[in-house]
Amino acid sequence: MRKFDILKSVQTVAFVALAALVAYVLRFKATDLAPTIASDNGVRLLFIMLWITLGASFIFILFDFFFFSKFKKEYIELDFSIHSDPVAGIANRQSSDAIIERYLEQDYLPQNFGVVMIEIANIKDINTKHGHAGGNKAIREFASILGNAAEGIGFASRNGGNKFMVLLEDCDKELLAAFLAKFQLDIKNNNADPESTYNFEYRYGMGYNEVDKQKSITDLISLADRRIRDPYASSKH
Image 1 (cartoon, helix red, strand yellow):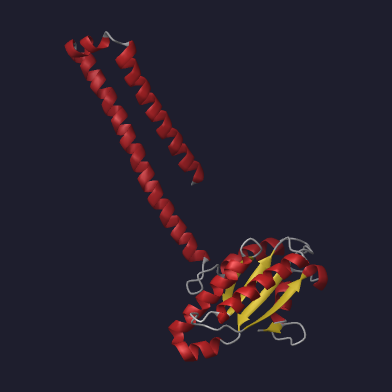
Image 2: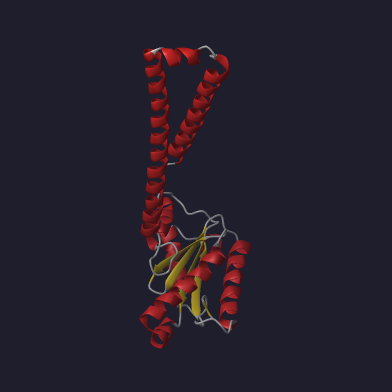
């Protein structure tokens, strides 16, 4: 679509330049043409057909831009609906699968790859207190906090239910620690805000391949998921 957009922009510029050139020639260079147009029916007809053609071409270009903009908007909305979770408002599992599949095709998993699995620990209490609609809103707010913390660091997605996943490519210990610190601080600030509707408790488990030495990305994800329940390797807040 970007190439099409560029093509139409070039066409518009070329059309405006051509129209300006024709107008300039008629006004300043072909000064003897005006009497001919006025007196010769054939020349007048050609002149009228020329400007009708130029006008029609401009209208067609405008229509192309209109329909392309409409198509582009619909494409963006469709892409968002396919790759985003309707409740959480962030990427869904299908989007993270696209990243996972890239590493499944490799013979080994890079060392500098990290995974953090996070779940809302008190989602049942939130549902009981605020109802199903309130629980969905809580998931969206939690996802927003998670997405903001992961921005520029990793890829955050909802893994289903009350569980989320963050994939960190080209990751090191400092980057992993920076993400966790940012996320934990944002949750702490949310819970301390008197205007906040939801007080979140969460558990997380993480895997970092440089340390954990897993054979595949699915092994690393499974390890991080298991550590949510492992009292020695996970954390609850």
